[in-house]
Length: 337
Image (cartoon, rainbow, N blue to C red):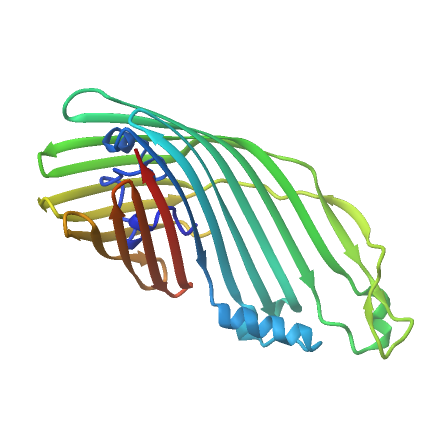
């Protein structure tokens, strides 16, 4: 997932103990107690190499096989909309990932994996005492998975009849919960602790695999048949479980320094990530500059930057991320009243 909120992403995702805006439900549900009376936001983000995607599209339009380097890519999209009050919030967001694959070792000429998750979230929070706030997210989840496998067309005519390409998909629905706390250690130092997607349960529905054979009636113009055969398909859909511990320090009224440790579990790439970030505001908080970085398992460090503008009730934030997965762009618009 890219994450939600350009301000948080611009700070390297070190937001567990900051979480004081309309994106608090996503990062730490306890954080909504720090927000103004009412807030509304919408935002979107994208990650991926557009140049390589364009190369793939050009190759396909010219009826050519794309280059392997252009094909082995990952693309992410997300969107978020939310309404927040100091003790209650409603939000909805979705993540969509597309992986394009070309793998000679698996005899795949072209393939894709698609995953999508949509969340409807209700958040409640309360202040236990002057040092402690607690928040809970109740989440309704809709998830989908799909995969496409297209082996290269055989050159040996004896293998025409055994050729198969497949398209498989299934969906699931369920519930999940986030539990978050904020602890004010000193007037300038805050600690946050969050468990995401605890007690989650996704019920996968019966899926389908459509299998396409080869139409070789014209050996000079091989193509897939128009009438696939269908069979059951099963793919277990699991939500990642993450645990975050963060600190936020404000040495000056206009400066925020933050650090998070994130444990990602229940995925194919479980890992521990470190997030570091800072924010500096100026001109009576009209302008904000942000920088951050984060670790990535088996890859070099990722770097982030962000810019924010706040004019009366309207706020606009932009963020940019550069890591080995590609480049990420996020933009959000917030209204407080």
